[in-house]
Structure formats: structure tokens, C-alpha cells
Image 1 (cartoon, helix red, strand yellow):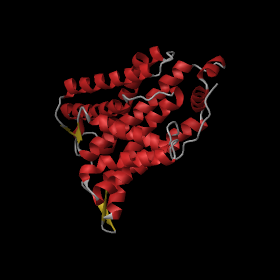
Image 2: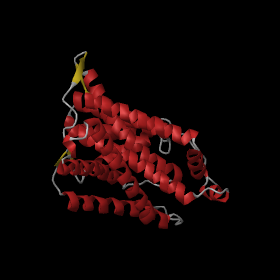
Image 3: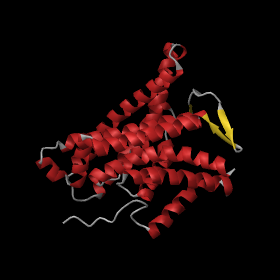
Image 4: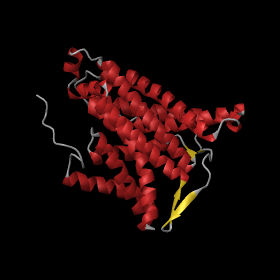
Length: 302
């Protein structure tokens, strides 16, 4: 049972980590908590489902090979959600960037979250939408633990995306610009960096990662629902804080830790209290290390 819960926790933690990366990227640049990010995750799941519906209605689902169909589903969802993230930044956050009261952008984020949730409910319905069972029911039995094909796919895909993001931020010109804007966007603009463009790209990258997590979540659990983003987004935010908000490796670590804690709590104690274990762990970490597992104490800017 230990190994089985560990596998389940790593799978769930990989999804949390992908969502948490969006939180930590936006906070690292704007010092803003994008509370609409959970709904971005939800919309990404529905965009993937919408693409599959199009394939079925046109009959292409029986023609296109399954690996290609899965790849196209991810691309459609990630691109559509990236543009949704850019639109969200342009409408809900950019006009409020210069305000001194940090509570105002937070209220705007909550309003955007409520809008997206209701938009999804009116567009896709208030009931659970069944995700297609694309992956065959195939797996391996290792030490009395069942490791399914979709779990391996989720873990591998998440790791590759996290590595790709790390290389993008640390090894590319765009990444240097993102780090410069995160350090001081006023000085970065004086040095010729197009701050608005970099912030929009940051929102697009974070939203596309959340969309990929949404598609994988739908495949794994077999459903998509208009309110699925609330709790998943809250847990991903918890994971970002757990690892150190604004820290990309910390968001990854926090996501995996949260998924494993939740899985072991549900398996060994009670599945009804699985959400409680994650937040108790967050409280415990913040009492001992307020900056998070990999966060650093940064002096206030003067």
C-alpha cells in the first residue's frame, strides 16, 4: 500500500506542480497572486475536451493515430488557454498595475475567477462532462503496486515541461528578460526591455502549463466540471507557498510534496479528510519556515 500511495501521490503532485508554476511565475514578476489561475486550469481541461468532441463529430478520431490525437489535444488546449491568459492579463491586471493599493488587483483576480467559472457553467453545463478514455487500461505490477500507463505519461510529461521551463528561464534571452523584469521592471524598461510584452508572455506560459495540467487531470479522473478549478487552484497555490512563492524549483517541490501528503493522508487515515492534510502541512511549514522550503528571505526594496 505504501508504494501504491506513493505512485498516486507523485502523479497528483505532478499536476499540482504544473499549476503552481503559473502562480509562482506571475508572483515572481508582478508580486501578484493570480487567483483566477485555477479557472485557467479548468478552462484548459474543457478546451482539451472540446477538441476531442470536434474530432469525434468530424470522424477524425477514428482516423488520426491516438498519439497524434493526444498531442493535438494538448496543443489546442495550451494555445487556446495561453491566449485566454493573455486576455486576462490585458483586461483584469494591466490597467491596475500602477495602483498602490495591492488589494485592488486581488479583487480583480477574484472577479475574473468568478466570471470564468460562470462562463464555463453556462457554456459547458453544470454537470460533470466525461473525458474520453484514450489510454488503454494497461499497467505494470511492481511490488504489489499498480503503475498505469497514464500515470507514467503524466509524470514524464510534467517533468519534461518543468525542465523545459527551467531551461527557458535560465538559458534564453526571453528568460533573462523575465528575470530582469522580476528584479525591477522600471529599470528593465529603461534598459530597452518591453515590459508589457514580457508580462503577457509570462501569463501565456503559465496558462499553457495549467492547460496541460487540466487535460491530464481530465484524462486521469475521467471528468471535467466548471468548478474543478477552485480546489485545484487553491491546492496549487498552497504548493507554491509550500515550496517558496516566486521560486520555480520550489513550486515543483511543493507540488510533489503536496500530492504525496494528500495521497498518504487519504490512504492511511481517511479520504474524507485528504484536503485537510495538505493545509495542515502548509500551516506546519509556514510556522517553521515562513519563506517556504526553497524560498529565501529577501529584504524590502527601498
